[in-house]
Length: 447
Image (cartoon, rainbow, N blue to C red; front, top):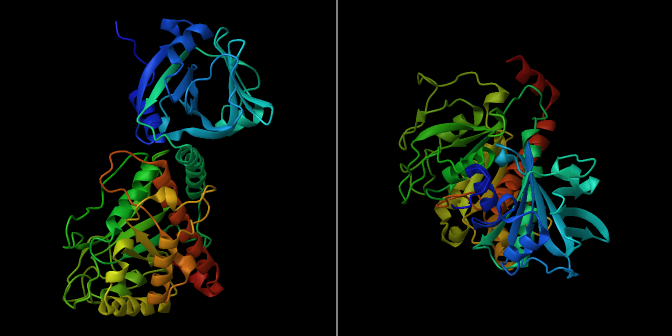
């Protein structure tokens, strides 16, 4: 009879995604192979990177060990980039991550992780007990005050993982930072109280990644890849309607306080793509969701769906130029002129303006180890400086992002960069809203 895991399909997929879409092969199951450390080591030594999972009535707690299981009495003196994780049963998308730069050893039948001579995490197989340091317990959200007895212990070999400790460090830290950014964005509220949602308009050439960015943001909050905004596969604009997309939180199903607005692609030729005369009306909130664009004629005040008296909460609060980082050198003088024409309207409306550079090669090289700043790689900086000079936009308002395209699963590194960029845009908008004249804010509230 085949030995099967107690993990649900969703729980297993969450762990696979966490490690970069790997495969998990069950090596040891304590109820089948025994609760002794001998039986565990007999099946798990020299098997490469592993995940050890402990099952409790209402939760799962586990630990990832890169490289081989340590032999009895042998200690990994060099701290390794392992991590612990936990999630409530049937809520795998809300996984808590705690990074451990720890020494690992097996002694007296116990698998122990020590950091700065402090025991942080210890599994006693023979007694089916787990002990966790209070600080780690708090970080994992399990709040254990004494040793816990677990129901089952399973160990999996991780297959297909990158043999790169630097990469693993980034993945584990990205997962931790991703959760922090998710929490911050879920708690976000605009500084002007009576503006309930920040509206971000994406503008750029056809195929630059506007719709893909919308799908990417929605995917991160849903905990799975979504394709609500239609993405084209050639140089013809797929988006012909003005679309306003709300972002729903997969955690509790509520809508978050920001919306992403999609439009036709900009084109250097007149009569092709988005009509520039439509843009002031979009910025002021006069264009409704699902309005059908015409490249040859803009919406007018006598149009049946034209919103004649929009309030501050209806307007666009941030415009994001979306550009393919690999096509910066191909941007023509006509395209630059059109961007600057739009830019004048944006500034006249007092709207925030940023640039998103999409289709970067490796997002893991863009983020520093602390996941708070962009990496100063020569290529990236050259492109940012070039865009800044070309469009007269400050460097600190230019961001790089890697959208989801053909992937089937989420990636914590991409998630972190997408969330970071979204947070920065919202902060820029908040700074502008805070600077609004007091009377303007009052009028926004009365409408």
